[in-house]
Image 1: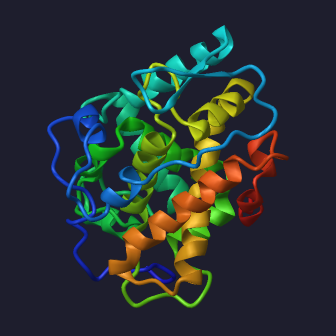
Image 2: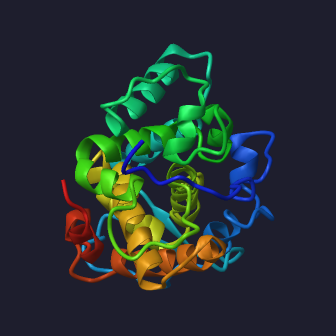
Length: 273
C-alpha cells in the first residue's frame, strides 16, 4: 500500500443520482461536483484552420449552427455512439476493461474481484466502481484506460499524487476522471446533431483528423485540472472552482489561432509518457 493516497473524506457529493446517463447529462444537476462543468458558457470566436466548417446563425437561435462535412458527421456519430453506451457490469467487455484498468494502475497488486474494497485505493466511492459510471458511461472507463496506457507516467503521477504540495483533502482520482469525461461532453456539446459552439466546431475538426481526439483531450484536461489544482493550492471543497478554471483555460487554448492539432495545445506539454 506504500505510495498510495488514501482518500479520507466522503465523495458522495461528487456525482448526483441519475436514472440514466443521457438524462443526467442533459440537465444542470445540483451535484456540487457536476455543476461547474455544465453551467459555464463557451468562448465566442473561431480560430483559423476551420474552413471545412461553415457557421450559420438561425433566426430562432441566438447561437450559431455549423454545417459538417460528411467525414466530420461520421466522426461525430461514432463518438456519440460511444457516449450513449452505459456501463453494464454484466457485459464481459466492460468487466474486462475494468480489470485492465486495475492491472494498468496497480500492476504489482492482484485484484480480488470487480467488487472489492481495493477499488477505493483508486479513488472510487465504494467497493463497486460500476455505481460511479452513471454520469460518464462506459466511455469514462475507456478514457481512464486510454490515459493509463498512453501516458503511464502522468497517469501514475496523478493517481498517486506524486507532484506538488498536496492538500490533506485531495480529490478522489477515479471519480474526478468520470467527471472530466462528463464535463467534456457538455463543453463540446457532443450530444447535439451539429455543434452549436465555436469550441465544439473546432473540436470536430480535430476529431475528423484523429479518431482518438476525445481520449487525447481527456488526458490533456485531467493533467491541466491537476495543474490548476496545485496552482490554486486547492482542497476538496475547491473542486468546483478548479473545474471552472480548467474549463476556461481549455476553451481558450482550443480557440488559439495557431493550433492545428491537439498536440499543439499549450497544456499538452504537461503530459509525460
